[in-house]
Length: 224
Image 1 (cartoon, rainbow, N blue to C red):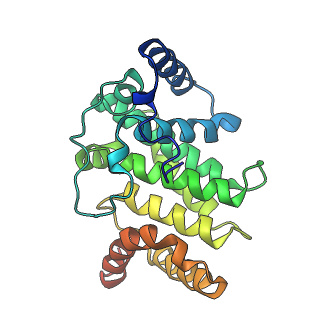
Image 2: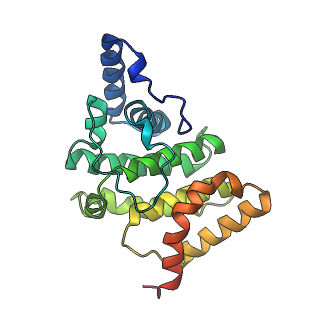
């Protein structure tokens, strides 16, 4: 998905087909139920990004600010167009990553890895200040429970090291300035070691390049 299967797709379609395509994406994005719909929702995030802004694919500079990207499609605006929409997108991305890392729900490790990468790419397109606000954006308390749930799934017995690494990268992005417990940093180091032993580290170059500096800083900071 992130390697370009949908690049420039919208430009190749007639106007009426583009509008129908966009309408269908919006219908999926409007779904209030996740569960088995979690992975299709992630695919939709990836399709929206690739269809409208294929030039963003492969940009892995951690210092780049993608939050000023403009969106012409209804689906793009639904995900990224407003502050409230962005906050909902962060919540949905977190819920879908929890599902992808859950295990035993019919999601293969390869699907989980690709899905979490899409979730990471989605967060890269959201303003950092909104990501910081997200933690206190829900009066019901649901948002506050998502980080512990994600940590629980990341630490589950038997999780694939590749899935764990990608989920830790997502966690680092969603935490922002909030420093995690050192046990989380140790998990990241263990995931890197396991991937190196399996000979898979080279295929995770972008994820490691973006996540390693974050965890390295956390490793050097005193634990809070």
